[in-house]
Amino acid sequence: MVTKDGEDVTEQYEKGAEETLKIAKLLNIKKAILKQRSPSCGSGQIYNGSFTDTIIEGEGLTTKLLKENGIEVISEEEL
Image 1: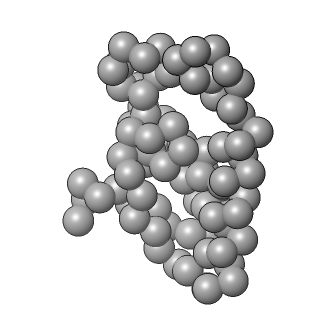
Image 2: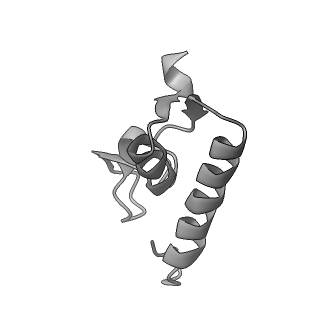
C-alpha cells in the first residue's frame, strides 16, 4: 500500500486489519458491512492503486482477513 506521495503505508493497513479482526472476535461478530472499493475494506472491487480511479476485482486487506476468519463481509452497496 503506497500513498499518492509514494509513502509505504502497508504496515499501518495491516495493523488496522488485525485490530479490526481482534475487535470482531471479541464481540463475536459474524457479519460486517464495509466500504466498497476501499483498499482496506473493498469486497469484490477495489481501486488498483494507480490513483486513476481504475477499479479492479479484488478484496481489501481487512475484508480478506475477516473472511479468512469466517466473518461474512458485504459492502454498503449490497444493503
